[in-house]
Image (cartoon, rainbow, N blue to C red; front, side, top):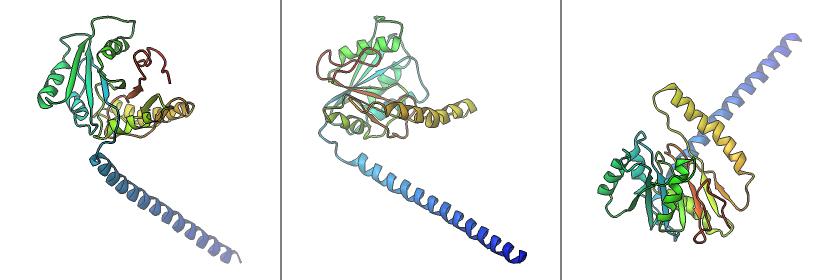
Length: 248
């Protein structure tokens, strides 16, 4: 009797083990299929003609050089958005990051690029102070604010601007993922950005169903901070981060 019970238990455990193994194999197959389909879809999206979207001013404050700064700048000149400009802002006219901007102008002479030297100090936050002065030079009412170490795919602008077509949406933002360097500290920071920080950000964003629309897509490959996009209804109706509220 005891031997029969043991055999039944062993067979049950074997069936359970095989079922678990089958489940994990199905998960791996599904993940592989998803990634393949996702890559094909992203490739098709990047090559698709740009929709009819408003012109955009990208505000990019600078302070010194970041790793691979030129490669990050370059991705912003390859966007499939029909009309946009890039406004760089520095506090120091001799900032070393301007060498990369000049190189960018030489490679992309047709791209609208402005460099604003922000001589005023408007408060304790230098970055926000520079953004306020860069805003005055922006040609367009739809703004994208991104740091100098952001790297984006070709359809980035179209994807983050599209939600602003909804009249109830006044602001759009997106998550980002870090790409680590060779050090342990850099790898831990990238892990924290992609897990703990991203999850906390999504929980916070879920509280703002109106009037903000939060785009929680990842835009690989991205380095650094995500972009904040502001739709302005007219002069004085919008504000850069930290300078005021968004009027809907």
